[in-house]
Length: 209
Length: 183
Image 1 (tube, rainbow over the protein chains, first blue to last red):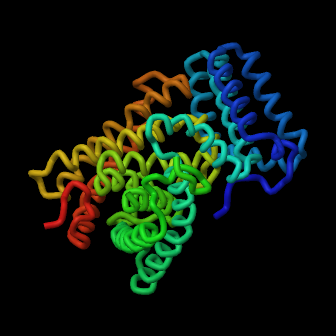
Image 2 (image 1 turned 45 degrees about the vertical axis):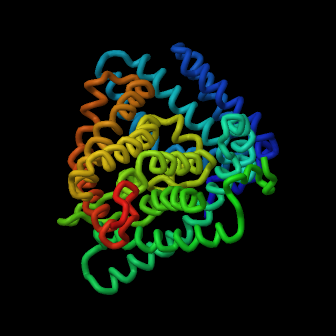
Image 3 (image 1 turned 135 degrees about the horizontal axis):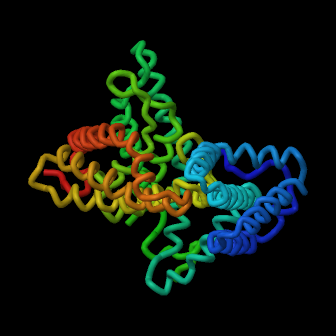
């Protein structure tokens, strides 16, 4: 499965995931606490610089991942302009732009393994509440394995629809997608039970709590 | 235990699959993205607790950087964007849908699931969604409400479909719907 990590190797890839995540949270929080246009503008320039330091290709990739945001920025910009409050609109748009671009930067430069490791570290205190964090790690791995398999099954069902009908596939195909998946899940659950005891599974290497 | 974890992971994966397959068509050829239908089915089939956990697990994987949202979006950016409220609403919505589906046991399962999907998947879902837009886009309640209005008819249809699909699943695999044990 394709992750959103950038294939362009950057110095940010080598920073610890925890540090990147912490910095992202702090910067985003302070952006939302401030209503000064100078702060937001500085944030946008700063984030753009972080991309540009790596190179034009990386900046272009960053802009690409911002595409879903543009419609919102345009609407909010026009709305505030019509209200006669363009500076307020600029603050909202710049803040959103910087916050999303910075969050994307962390995603683009943090490998999936590192991200999972960070999450497991952050979840560790939950063990005191009796939550088996090993099960969460196990579930994450299961989903990552399931998605391509289920997607494959779904595509096969869509293909057989197309083989039979001139019309585009309709919603009726969803129930079979779920049925095939549910049958698979029953078998998967059985084979997990045959191999492991998940009730005390608490660490990535299978150690008991 | 194994079955609970497997089913939760399975439905998290199915939410992703419904967002990644090409758009399906509704009766007269209206294209729909089926991802929000997946959220509704988490609640109607898995029940409140496991349904909400499946949605949480799905969002966790999105946050970790997997492009699982409809259209291949994902990463931390979507949680800093204007639609973050709807992602929160998915979790709450799935929980409420699960509660209502199991609460309305006097009704046929498809009808109960449909009603639950309207209340949990539309009313409950849009409350955090609208609050999120108000905060992120600095909108008034009225403006935020107006901007989501065009999506309501499609969501109503999806709720009806969620009811119908839940009924089909319950008929094809008795016992699969959490709140309606087989027999």
